[in-house]
Length: 400
Figure 1 (cartoon, helix red, strand yellow):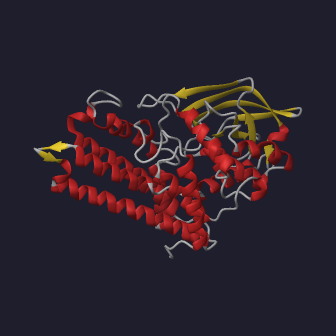
Figure 2 (cartoon, rainbow, N blue to C red; figure 1 turned 30 degrees about the vertical axis):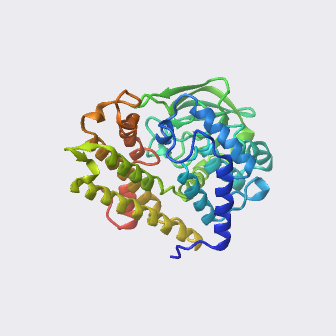
Figure 3 (cartoon, one colour; figure 1 turned 180 degrees about the horizontal axis):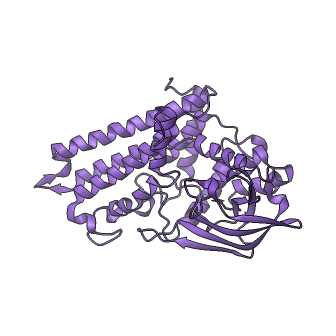
């Protein structure tokens, strides 16, 4: 593994760094405000509009859809340049894009499998965030086993008529369009008879109900479809072959460059908390037990970073994605949970003060993070599922 970046990559880094320095919103940078530190599961008042403004500024600068072909508005960026982009935006705590699913999943799927009409219609507005996308896969009884979905699409003339429900649909309350898995052959085996369609979220019969989390925020939703008409021209791939299309979309998800720098940044913030907290007449960071724990976290975060580099190396060699994706998902979410638990231990009684409460350390950020950290062990495939994948496919253990 070569951990050195090429001269071309370093020039790319400097170009990006200079652009960020000139364009990063004033409310960002360095440590950021309290709202900015909360991460992807937080969406406070005005946060969506701030992210939308930042997305469009990035698009104007040519920094959205880096890996996409130039003919579709991208930059044909290399894998290492995508990695550098993640490093540099994380370094300054830059706002997230608002159309993450559209950029990461929908666009690449359309580029590979969409008709020319579909590409011209949807791709430009994905990049510019003129149209926001969500993903309609999971259902109440088909979460980890998506192929068990029961949302139906019955043909009626030039349309499909959709009835059913999806759940845990991130950004559905903002979305204009949805990539939707529906069952179009009710008698076929569960992995057959599924079709992949594009659904206008503003269609009559679509109801979005935000799901309020323990933090009080609502970043994902349940979505109901009642006799929603979808033109047949919105079908991606062949009818009843949607499972193969869905797997390709998931391939783009799993092959995306993993952001392994959040853990390192969180450890850094935890160290600053330990430096500021009084404990037994001195600072918490002066206690040997605390220092040992912080060192353990730092080592784990570094290990996750280089595990991510292993994944990048596989892709640079043209190899298919390996087990690193599951390892990173499992390791990052587990470390995040334990980091926040330890912050609660250090805070003691102060850990009971909620976000932005008077007298709370760091305005209660750590309490908020603790409440939201459990969600990351579920999102993107539960940690239990990741354990099974690693056990069965990597270690060759028998199925339980």
